[in-house]
Image (cartoon, rainbow, N blue to C red; front, side):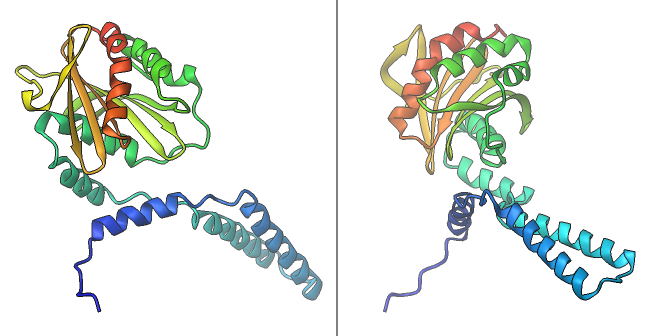
Length: 253
């Protein structure tokens, strides 16, 4: 008999969330529920043809509520705000200070989000960015890994900083390109420098926190991050592919 092991509640939550998200909503669920309600209404009309109108209305409203409740069972709820903050704090503590800047925004804006089934139109996504950063969207779209499509493109504020954030998605895989304003004196630590790798005068840095891989560089007064759960080498390759284009498209600060 194995000795008792302490429960890892956070890991259990994460596994449960992934399991729920992996369950597709049956395409005909709503139709099946509505058919059952319609059949019940017809049977009730035959057995009680002289129901008062208020009973008929109440029954119909109850049926509509049943449809909504049945569909909702298949839609996982996001964690509460306090749970999100606790998770971000715990994971971010495993990364260096400047790497936390991009990682926190990635988890806050990309991980804790419900996505539509279809990617929004390119025109809509590009228009959501400040004009000075619209060129960054073109660079990201051109260099995303095969099968990934842009799903989120916006300017946001998190933990006291302004960000330009783009999220690309393939099935349940997410990748963020996060651009933050670099504050005076900020610089990635030399210990996280990727040795022997430079492109267009840029140096690259890497870090990780749990299964999140973070690649970063500094350019034109910005901190630029690529964050995903892909292998570290692949995540870095995506950053390098985008780096020169991003550097050229970013405004000088």
